Every structure is written in structure tokens, then in C-alpha cells.
Length: 278
Image (cartoon, rainbow, N blue to C red; front, side):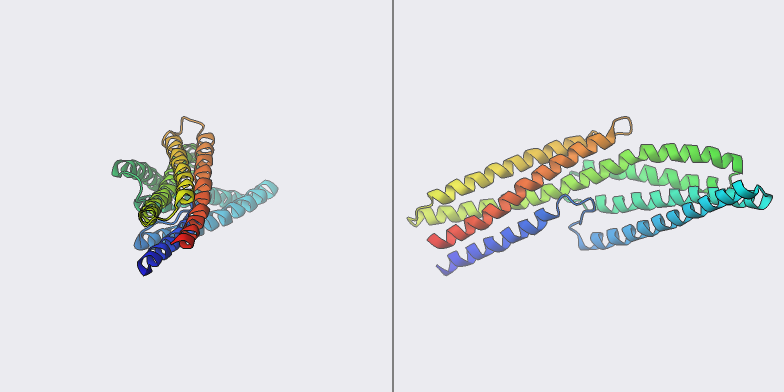
């Protein structure tokens, strides 16, 4: 009897964990499993947020410099405007580099995708980081005329590069929900073993079996939604309507997460019912 109680108590703790994990599975910023990786990600993300603030300040200064030049049309205001144009472009590149580095840190610690998938994402992110870093010295040394051209080149690149960001973010989301689904499956298997023990002891477990079957069906549906999401995210490219594709994939993630939430509630109910007949 004591052994049975320990098993059921363990299941209850496990079920609570599913609820906590499932509740955050669809968040845009995802937590990694590795502690060191998580710390590194938070550090890089903090650097990214700081770079965004720097960019916003630079943009505000650029608008002020542009207004001053339009009002005064002096060599001094023109020179300041050119300086601010160069600064805003450099800050935009820096912010994008930090964003890609944050995504890279996150992607490195995804435990629920294959090494080939992970390598493909990291390679894409590294290409973007390297390209932007190579452009920064060109920005620093550019003439006013060259800045205009560099601005067009980088702006177009950043637009296309959003596809990389969307793809990496989506795959991280899919990896996280897959981890939660795997935990739910594991706990379902343990519950099944316990039901079989109760059945062997002559207990009426018919209602438990019905409930567990419904739980397993929802887990299957969650897995199907995860696979659909993963397919959507993997198809994202700069040539496609990546925002539309990402949103479709994100909806699949939300659907999968909803099934896992239902599983969480039903597993709690299942454990309670087990306690009544143990």
C-alpha cells in the first residue's frame, strides 16, 4: 500500500510539472533546458535589448539632425546629419547581430531537434552574423554617397534576414513543445503501468482506462500539431511569405499546447481517481 501511495504521489508531482511546462511552451522567448546555456542566452538577450535602446536613441538623434538640417541648411548641420546617418546604420547592424547571437545561443541548447536540424539553423544564423560584421567597417569608412548605397543594401538584407529569425524562432518553439509532449507521454506510460497494477490486484479500473485512453488520444493530436508546425517552420525562406508561414506554424504550436493543457488537467484527475481505488 505504501509503495502504491509513493508511486501515485510521484505521478502527481510529474503531472504538476507538465502543467508548468505546458503553460509556457508557446512563449516567443523560450527557456532552454541547460542551465549554463540558459544563463548565456539571458546575457546575450540582455545585450540585444541594450543594443535596441541604443538604436532607438540614435534614431531619435537622426530625426533631430534631419530637422535641423532642413531648417538651417548649414555645413555644420549637414555634417551632423551625415554623421547620424552613419551611426543609425551601424547601430541597426549591431542590434541585428545581437538578435542573431541571442537566437544562436537559444538554438544551441535545443535538445529536441536532430543535430542536422540544429546545424542547419546555426549555419544560417552564423552567415547572417558574419555578413553584418563584415559590413560594419564599410559603414565606418563610407562617404555620404556610399552610406546611401550601404543603407539600401543592409535594409534589403535585414528584410530578407527576417526569414532566418522567423525560422530559428519557430524551430525553437517546436523543440520546446516537443519536449513537453515527450514528458506527457512518459507520465502517461507510468500511469498505464499503475493502472495495470491495480487491475491485477482485482480493482475496477474501467473508468481509469477510459480516461487514460482519452489522454493518449490528445497526446497523439498534440504530436500531429507539433509535426505540422515543424513542417511550416522548416519551409520558411526569404522567397516565401514567411510571416504568413510563421503564423500558421505558430497556430499549430498553440493548438498542440492546448491539447497538452487538457492532458495536464486529465492526468491530475486520473491520479485522484487512482487514489480513490488503491
